[in-house]
Length: 582
Ligand code: ADP
Ligand code: MG
Image (cartoon, rainbow, N blue to C red; front, side):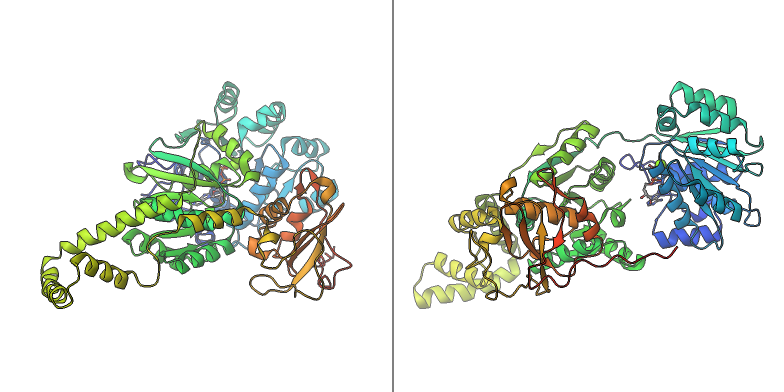
C-alpha cells in the first residue's frame, strides 16, 4: 500500500521503468496507457523478475494479471517451443481474460504464442496449437489435468507457474488438481500465487510447494472511504442532462469528474455541457496520452472544472481539486464504482459522489450498496427554487465582490450620481437597470411554473413530445420523413413486444438505449401494436449495438430485434455478419 490512503491501486513513487521490465513490455504498457504500476505490481514484479516465488494478496481489480504477466513476458525465451509458463485460473472467462491481457502486453514481442485451454473447447484446436509451439498456457485446472493425463501437454520445460485467483480455484473444488500440477512440474520453476484472501488451505499449499516465497499483502478497500458522501438520484434516461445541469448549478463543486459508459458519450456530453456554459472536456481511451495529460493538468490548475471520462481514462487519476464525482451512467460493477468515487476525497479532503440511477438500474444500486456495505442516500432533483436560490446568492456574491474593488467603484459612483440627479430616478432602479445590462438576454431565474410543465413533458414517453405526433394510431407514412435528431437516416425495426405485453414506449427506449448504447436522440417514432412494436432507429446502428441488443429483454421477454420488412425505410437492415474463413 502506498502512502496514499485513498487509493488501493497506485504507488505514486515508482514507474514501470524502475521495475526492470523489458523494453518491449514497457512499450506495450505505454500503448495501453497505464500511468504507473499498481501497488501489487510494484511489489511483486521485482521479486518475480529476480526469480523468487511470490504470494500476492490483493483484492480484485488491483491489477494482479499484469503483476505476473509482465515479468513472465520479460523473461520468456522465445526459442523454446515447449510451454514455459502455465497460468491456472478458476474459470474459462478468467482464463480468456488472462490470455487477452498477455497478448496485449506482448504486442511488441514478435512470435509469442499464448494458448487458452479450458473445458468445453474442442481438444483438436488445443492440440494443434500445442504441437506448433506455445510459450504460455492459460487454463482451468481440470482441463490442464486432462491434458497431462493424456500426455498432450509437455510441462518438462516449465519455468513459471501462476495460480491466479487461488482462493476461487479452491472454492471451486480444484484443490487436488492444483496440488497435482504443482507437484508434477519441474522443481526449479518459479511459482506465483495470487489471491484475494488467504484461507488456511492456501497457506498450507504455499508452505508446501513454494520456495521461501516473498509474501506481499496489499491492504485493500472492501468499502468506500468514509470521507466521501454518497448519494443517488433516480432519473429517467432523457432527464439526465438536465439533472446534471441543475446539480452543477446548486452543488458547491470545485472540480468534477462525470463518468459515462462509452467513449463517444464522453465527447457528446462534454459538448453539451460546453453549450450550456460549463468548462468541460472529454477524456477517453482514444484520446492520445499527451492530450490526456494536458487535459488533466488543466483540471489540476483550475483552467477546467469538469472532466467527462470513461473508467479507463480516469483510472488512477489523482487530482486534489476533484470535489465531486458524478456517475452519469452508473457502473455495472462494484469495483469500478469504488474506483470512480475514489477519484474524489483525495489528500484527506471530503468528497461527494452522485450516481444517476434509471429505474431499470435499481438492481445495480442494490449490488453496489451490498458490496460496499454502505447505503447511498437518495437525493432529489434540485427544484427550480433550489436553482434560483443559488443563482440569487451567486448574484449577491458578485455584487459583494464588485463592491470590494473600491477604486473602480469610486470611478463609477460619480457617473451614477450624475445620472440620478439628471433623471430623477431612485438609485435602486438604476442599480436594477445595470443588472439587466449585466445579465444580458438570459433570465436570472427559472420560472417554477414553466419548469414544472417541462418536467412533466420530460417524464412522458418519447413519441408524445413530438409536436404533431399522433398519440395512439399508426404512423402516417409519407407524411413524416424518417429522420433522427441529428438527421441520420433512420430505419424501422420490429421488436417482439407489444400491447399484449403491456409495454410502454419508455421501457422500449430505456432497454434499447441502455443495452445498445444509444441515446434518446437516436429514437424516432415508436408504434406499439398488438404483439409487436415498430421502432425507428438509425439505419446504421453503432458497432456492437446489434449484438448487444440480440439478448435484450423487456419485461422478461426477448425483444428479437429485426428490421421491419414492411417498412419503406428498412432496406438498410442489420449489418451482415462477416463470414470467417477457417
Ligand atoms: P485483478 O486481477 O487484480 O482483479 P486485473 O488484472 O484484472 O485485476 O486488472 C483490473 C483492471 O486494471 C484491468 O482493466 C487492467 O487493464 C487495469 N490495470 C492493471 N494495471 C494497471 C495500471 N498499472 N494502471 C492502470 N490500469 C491498470
Ligand atoms: Mg485477476
